Length: 536
Image 1 (tube, one colour):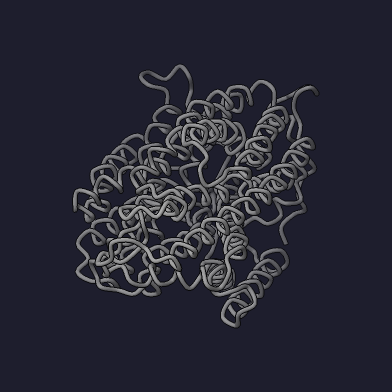
Image 2 (spheres, helix red, strand yellow):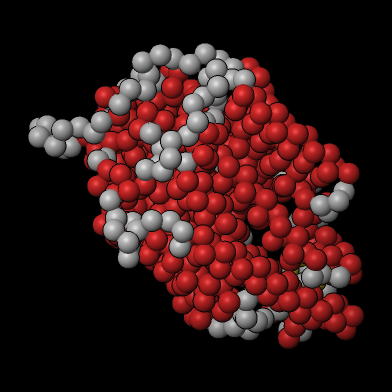
């Protein structure tokens, strides 16, 4: 892409400035994709029952979406440079909407799995290109604000997913979990096709089959291994096999990209830029500290406290609300002061917050949890988009799409592995008999089983016990197991949150190395690190 094609529209142009048209178009399109990452999780048990499938087969409904996202995201920047960023972005959105329609019409499990793969492929293309178009449309002095406003969609959509999914599932309308994407997607495609401008590269890169093949195998294998590492064990043969295939493929991919490829798929030489590398490292560590820990709270609320999916979504809402309010404010502050003060403040709050969450017990008041989640949202709003815009600010303007693909694809891998690590820490606190008890109830959703939280069931009240529907109250042996399970789970949450505390500490220390206040901040020019070596 030429620099000329990446310049924002002139502020004197009549009507709504082009930058705001881009922002509106991208928010509508990406909000739909991000929403779908969590809305389906709520309906998982319903889908298992609907299609009469075991847990191993049903898990592909979620796993295939993650795999497809991880495989297509590295390809997005290359496709945009070859065919035009608007065309590929619209292709991604259209593919996602088509996958949503087919998912809602799915007559069987494997048809649904295939449709979910189509959704993931489209979403993996659209997400990095939406960020790249937004970044390129705004002038350097407003890029923090732009991605801060865009952060509202990135942070609020995952929190609304469980609420919307819970309402639809409770109303016996599970197919509308997918159908709801269609009107939003059509609006997003319509706005993008009418408002966005095409940006074509001066010379289209040629297709690189070696890079594409090693990228697809590498990212796909690592994500596949991470998806069952916690359950199968990190030393199991299947996990080691797929991790080995994945990392070997990624090593070949990196070597070929750096030394042989004339048209690299991902510009790995961006890591030679000092601030891109530092901001990327902060982003990777923050993924474990922030999003990895967000995996823990729904498990705590549902497994231990007996809250429904809808109730869990409502409890998590303060996190999204404070994050959505803070993100655009942080973006404006970034434009004036740089990333350092925002990251130090955000990760400082996160450290305090995570330490408090590691101390929650089986009967911690929900109102205190609401406060802790609101505080966590504040940290989220200060840090997530800040690290992203800092890394992109160190990318040449003609390489924004490639830079966005590189950041998103690598973060996605780190997030998947981080969640698997936390799940392992949590599972490592459970004794064999408690794991067996857990499997009993997970593997038999068709049996009429009354479930409330493990810790709520300790009172041995008949209506709040994890027992078959035919029994009136748990036996003494079952009560003993329930109490033991509650204690072990609480200990596991303490260990997992304590791990994320140290991740937040590391992220804050890394954030101190980035530029900004109290040193003088020069905006995009202040991030000009040493240029990367020329491409081979």
